[in-house]
Length: 554
Image (cartoon, rainbow, N blue to C red; front, side):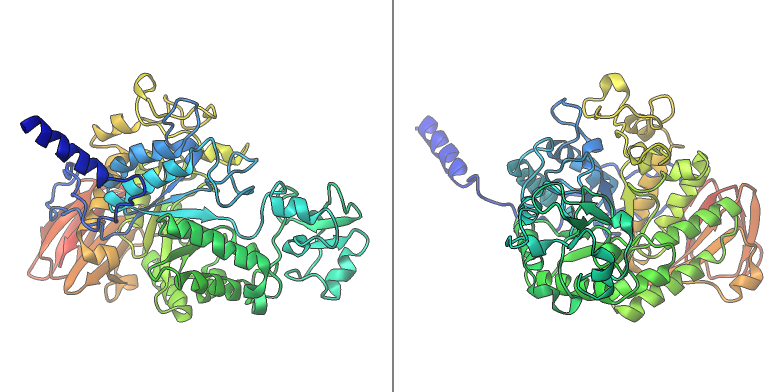
């Protein structure tokens, strides 16, 4: 009878776990077990595992983790490494394009509703989502909506004849009439002619050219006038594509190159289009998250795009931080951030300032900062203590190297999980030129090194997740800040619901002393062995080594 009872239990358990069941997201996953704070002489509160910081991690899928030994990163590899990201304190991941594509990077899509075979299957995707949900990690997908691949079925049909049902999905003009057609307003979405944007139709209607701003491999999608774009067939198709992935459990999307959907990047056309696209999907998912890429060097050019989307990447903040670190001129940076966020919120009250260091289109942080680990560490400390919603590019936490000189592939090299002889997940699709074993210490080695770049990321991610004021607090700076402090100091307050922290960064290669007159309760963390002494009842003297940080609780 005991044996029969045992088998009945097994049968019931199997019946309750059908293949189609989707586990609900776990809002309170078990907190990470390794929450040590070995590189600070001061005691912060212990992290309770709640990911208050809402920190995202960008994964270049092809380079991240290879599960099957074919040399190419894949979805199962990501699934296997989600526990690592959870332990680190990551709340969300952004995956670069996972769809079938003729390129290695995937930004020219052949099929928006399937997975590139090298990366796995839809079943693998479902398993990854389920694992991410169990760990409280959101997943957003890269969505390329301004162009397709020229191998996409829409384009292959569109070039066959002028009367094809997919002809209006793209922008065509007779080879001899492009300039005049644009000038007369007969080609939507364009306002000027540049010969490099127009390419010969390869077959069928060969007396025409088509528009592809980035490449002849990437024909531009035609959404028509922005005022009526929601009525176009491409718009309707993109909504259905997005709804498919939302039904699979993704939290939202990163939209590629949003200033290039309509050719005039400073008009209101792109924000109008983006607003319609976001709002149409928000009706399907109320907590939809969507972040846009507008690769502009001035935040004022990006700010109007908040009329369309809730979040935009802040490239300008990264460029300014590079100047700060290279010139030891730090004190204006909090003011810059405050002005940026004020501009964003003037266009959208709930604007999310998506901050970052480097990404897949830029020189890697450590390389951009001259290969100096101290500079890379202070960049990480600033990113994770300043206001905004931070994104980390894979490999930044171990100081991966890379310069775009010679090709974008150089900033998209394989992640180093362990020493080569023990690294079962390292991708080999590309032989690295920069992030080689003799130049970059693998993750497992850096975890054991209290002075590694990884330990800095681990520390400040934990702090941002622990203290609500660092995660979502307001930002301000002391009275007489600009008259009182030397330029190498960056000083600001983060405050939220009665909790107030004071953050000080010494962004210079020199030991510096700063006097502060604030009601200090206690220091909670530092980087670089910062010491302070009480001068009198209201004043403290803080001695800061090169590229160091201290955080006080007030």
